[in-house]
Length: 366
Ligand SMILES: NC(=O)c1ccc[n+]([C@@H]2O[C@H](COP(=O)([O-])OP(=O)(O)OC[C@H]3O[C@@H](n4cnc5c(N)ncnc54)[C@H](OP(=O)(O)O)[C@@H]3O)[C@@H](O)[C@H]2O)c1
Image 1 (cartoon, rainbow, N blue to C red):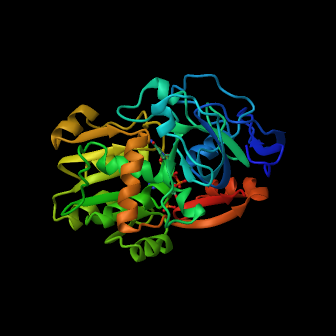
Image 2 (cartoon, rainbow, N blue to C red):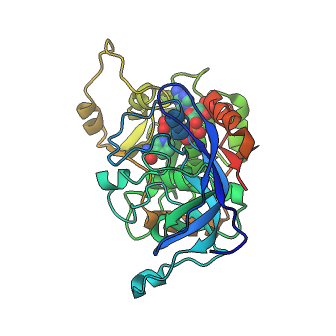
């Protein structure tokens, strides 16, 4: 440990009992064990998931593992290593050691290092079931962090772990050997939240044509300034899937980043290209199909255009590192809509709930 560290960590905690709680308290600052580091949290970006956890609504995934209650919410942090655990005398582990002063990013599922996500990885999710990052310091295993790209500010970098990695996997998760898709393809990004705007930036850097949807013309204008080729307002133009077919001369989109869920999936199936990929990410437009709505079975809709429907839960650490290399190469800067002070965390959460943001909302912690 360095001598200048405080004795206490200040953290937000939530009860997840259906009543949105976020209370501030302190606890003694612990020391890292072998293969662990103590990280001073600099910035935390907020995800839709964090709002659900705080409102007690994030209950539909299998989340094995021992749930903390009260729980420190949030998963996405940029921080700096301020203390390293004692040597473990294991040469492999020693190679993975971080140095004091290294700027790092948290990984969402701390044990998901490579390959297919498994229930055991879900048990290591930051901000549920494990204590998350909305605190001034946190101990991480050496393996639960990636190096932060130098060119990004703390606030920008904190946006990468969930939003950007999920968008990266939605586009490239099925590809092997570092192949990045996009050139000559059309990619649809739904909405202008964290995942979708990251998808827009990744897809444009890869040379794709991007169609983005939003409830707001003002946000569509912002998306166009970021490089979106077409914007469709899904409120004033609820048949946006027909617009996608028109824009693509009847071919359909090659990849759709499906963040809407029940309210958008069937539209996506109507504007996907033959052989296209629909990456199932979220459910901001509904979690349940309407019972009284008769439509062809999903099996038929998938085979009709030989579509791949791929569920995504973030991505492993090695794909996060691959994505960071792509970000560095293209100098992609995540879009930070607003930065809140640590004391204003509740306002920051409510701002995300309001849906007013374009891109990401960040809390400056230290
Ligand atoms: N599977 C995963 O690994 C993973 C990872 C991250 C997020 N997610 C999920 O993905 C979804 C988006 O997450 P996020 O963090 O990017 O959310 P966010 O930043 O809160 O953005 C949500 C945005 O969704 C858009 N939206 C709302 N209703 C819509 C509709 N009917 N059609 C199209 N867009 C609509 C809105 O965009 P406009 O304001 O422009 O209309 C809104 O700003 C959430 O359901 C989240 O739980 C999943």
